[in-house]
Length: 371
Image 1 (cartoon, rainbow, N blue to C red):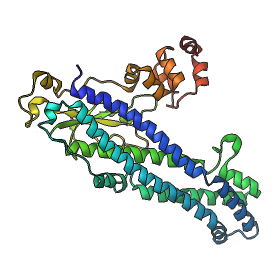
Image 2 (tube, one colour; image 1 turned 135 degrees about the horizontal axis):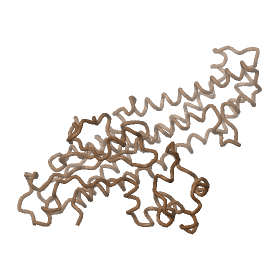
Image 3 (tube, rainbow, N blue to C red; image 1 turned 135 degrees about the vertical axis):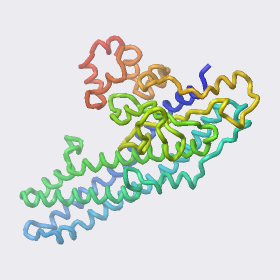
């Protein structure tokens, strides 16, 4: 039978995968908001450029004619900010509830009868989500910066176009991009990537912050914390270095048995960090409150750090339904029946290969998988 800490690690890896799917859904929601104003933005840009005229181009006049563009830009980022504030608080509440349910499920009832679990309040969740900076700024500050950054790109695009003598249509295409390229060639395309990074980072920051608060609130039973990195072709070098390292369960997060610093912590170490953590539950002998427990319960509470299981090993150990949920049906079959490992789904730069690229790379694997 798996020990408490082995069960905790297994659940933490699966939960991290689920949070990535949640992040994907939040990104799609925010992108729909951003895309919803594209048609209006294009019209307002064309109107502004026509009013600007090549003979009356000054910075003051430019800012005047772009007033409606700026207002539309400000409005959509305000909507994104409101949606994100609501989302991260909800995700934080979910995380607190998940941790409570996980502890109640994994830790033997005989132990919980003697050791009371504490919770993370809504006020604490809101503070973590909205009042703690990530990557140097609060959520509302990042929204202001992103709005200003896109406005500056629009302004710069018009300036360059006017200097180069481009037509109105050429300037708009330069800023917005072309349909043939999926608008990825426009100057404001970078803004979409920046928003996506902000969404993913805000979610991981909130979830990990709540996780850490829950561990600290239950420090009488959570002895230490283990860093868990999602080891695949996209994992950053700092996260690979810290995978499975142990830290103290306090504000300092001091290294245990090594010298690698915690820094900001998993999920917060860098932009779009996918690392997470798992609690190391104290052994039966270390629990002062728990006495007279059955031998089987005592054995499950051994306090040992589980053996390392990376993401690739974890996904291989899951059932077909879970593999298909995480990877998609085709890649799930390639993993199960095609003989491919997780890392083979990515190129040397950590980008997920398309199915066509995978087929070109290893057609035999598709044959083995019956695809």
